[in-house]
Figure 1 (tube, rainbow, N blue to C red):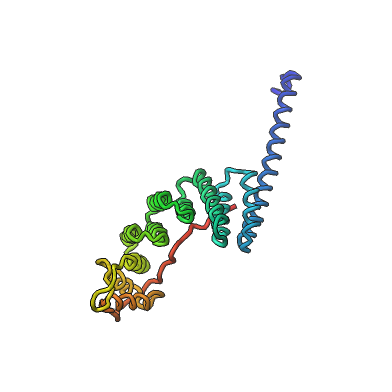
Figure 2 (cartoon, helix red, strand yellow):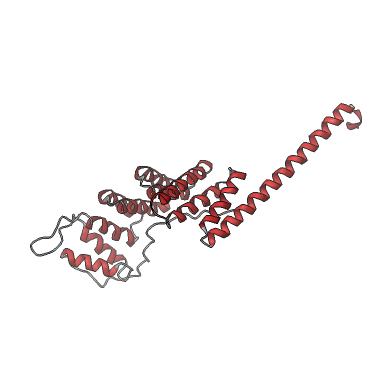
Length: 265
């Protein structure tokens, strides 16, 4: 009845609106299909460690729809992975591309702690440690249960750059967040060993206070861990007692650096 009262002009206007809606719907479906196809191709290449192909397909997906955070995240990781196989200027360029892609992912999903962690790793790879520190700390703030991992990654970034005092401070924060993880103590010990000032008359290393205690704590928590023998060797070099015979089940050492792997469709 309502349609019957419409003028020819109104009917034509309504038909035009319907036609435009159908056109936009079809365009959106084609866009989504194209993004999905490029993303799938990119992830297949990523799984096969074909970084050039992965970057090409994921870049295409990001151009079709720049609002997909998971596309940017995987693109950032692909650049980081390829950069790890390169040297010199090419490696620097890929690290920078990785930083840019992670920045896009964070812009779209600012509360994703894993994105901030991976952005920090990319910044550290570009020797931008101040920015990396901010991102690791932001990740720890957003995801307190994983703060130990993020501070351990921060410590490792400083350690790799031969900034042992900064590494020591970061590892101590990792211990505060995750006191039962033996890897935190082992890495703290290594950062302290990096500040050895020489050897005494007895030939024992002169290391900062707390060095022996860090390795002893590692052995307490992981007496048969992957770094147990090296920890014992460090203690002997320091002239400290190697304590054995700890009881209980030791948790496995955590990985040195962790990433939150971006997934999705």
